[in-house]
Structure formats: structure tokens, C-alpha cells
Image (tube, rainbow over all chains, first blue to last red; front, side, top):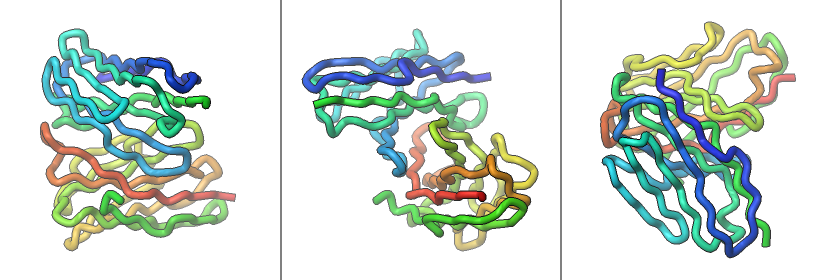
Length: 112
Length: 115
């Protein structure tokens, strides 16, 4: 069974700092998504990572994928308050026609 | 705005009742997914339809059912409602059946409150 673990589950940080959210998964996959959710709102797709070594960047967020380590990271550079949200990773299960298995989410609070 | 629409936005009902949630996918998308998100919980995948056919089932209760119509909109039916069914219900759509490059786009959700 494919399991996806995110850590930390909760992160409070100061503006201007850097931090990384980790997403580990338990079986083979070469497709990983990062989504953002604001409180009470819908989920917005941030990144799709489709191969080993894939790196994507948007503003202060950078996501990477290491399929050999079964690990993706979401790195936040010089955090700003507007990045406060819950971040989910989701992994496509290759043996289930790429059904997405979701992490529990990381609630990120960035204090001014 | 993802292009996925859901109605209603809010729904308040009593235990034992039945409700129907509606979802219209993005133009051209063939797959519809339903998710449940309880307060402070992660996403629970319920069910997927692709071009009118059930494609995958997740943790969907027997009291819940769904269908996708010829015009590709989908409905999620929740019956014999319990307090624990109170949650945000999201619909997502994607162009294909969940292949390697299929991104899911989420609707705004329906907040269901069971009293």
C-alpha cells in the first residue's frame, strides 16, 4: 500500500526565514504534486514533478523530486506572510493507474 | 478560478436526511473525483468517474453514492446523514483518466453541516 508522509505537519516561522517541507512515500512513483490550500478554501495546484531530479520554482517556492530516495521537498525562501497556508503533497500510485495518494498536509504559519 | 463549479456552497441539514452535491468539471475534462475533508483533516478520496463510468473507489461509505451524467457533470448523494459526515466536500476534474500527466483541478467545495 502506498503511503505518503509529510513533515512537519505544523510549522510556524518568521518572515524572511527559509524552511523545507518534506514528503516521503513508500513505493515506486515518478509523479508527485504539490498543492496549496488557504483556510476554508479550495486546493490550488502548485507543482507537478514528473521525473527523478525534477526541480520547479515559482517565486519563493521551489519543489524537487528524488524518486530513488522516494522524497520530495518544498523549499520556502525568505518566507512572507502571504505564503501562510496548508501545503499538500500527492503521489501518483503507478500500480493503481496513478491514483493520487495524499499526504496529511503541512500547516504553515508565517509571522510578520 | 479553476473552472470547476460546485453547488451548493453551503448545506445545513439534519441527521438522517439525504442530500445531493453537484459538480461541473472544467470544459473538456472527462474525469471527476470526489473528496471529503473533515475539520483539520486531510483529504479522503471517495470516488472517481471517467466519461460516465466509475473508475476508482476510495473510502466511500455505502450510504454515499455518485454518478456522472452524459454531459459529464457529477452528483454525490449522501444519505442517512450522521453528525460525522459534516465536512467540506470537494470535486476535482482532470482531462484524462488519471494517467501520468493528469493534473486534478479542484472546485470551491461544498460545506456540509449535519445537525
